[in-house]
Image (cartoon, rainbow, N blue to C red; front, side, top):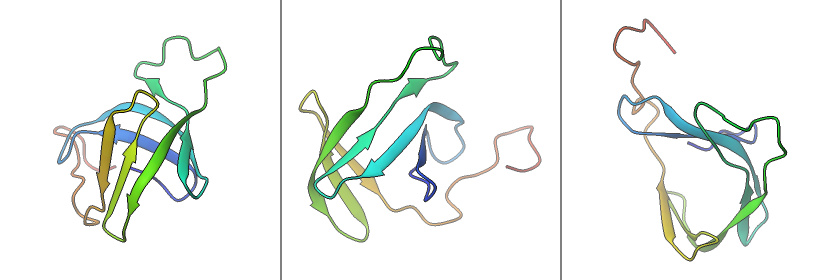
Length: 91
């Protein structure tokens, strides 16, 4: 999930919690990002900035290639697609 304030979280929809987090910035032909897996071991060290090269961008889909050459596709999700985890009242 890319948030408008420059943060992102990797989640398993529809009800999984975050597996990784970071910050991101749209650079036009690439997305610059940092990445940290939960539970953030090594968080005291500066995080490396990596890039996702944009191959296709539409209103509903973003297809990118990461620094290893692996394709990553992101889809726009409906606002109600993220559910509250079991045992939790609200986000």
